Length: 140
Image (cartoon, rainbow, N blue to C red; front, side, top):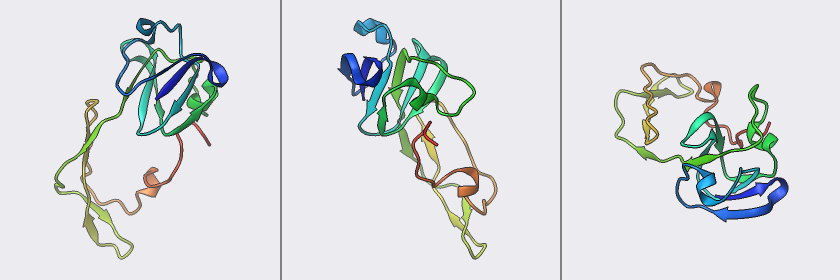
């Protein structure tokens, strides 16, 4: 991830491969534009991963509207960020409904950010719950 202190990829810039709990500790006042080269990242409104969080997928974010998107909550800067790290776990009692109505095994992803989920019933369409669509967070 590459971050800039000003909009439109201007001003002081820095590249990161790992999390940053406070951009101010790196000599920045704020982050106003971002380029994500790979993987999803989470940007936070305040230092130490506090405040509103925004998912940053691969792509360019020249202004705050690009990461705030259509959400009701908007912030013009980010002050901390970290990559999302997920590991594939062994499937356990989870199924996805195929077009024929049968349930096929699916994998559970456990994220290192402490987020957990489980599916107890077959879902007729993962697209119905917004899985499987290719999109960039914050961009309609």
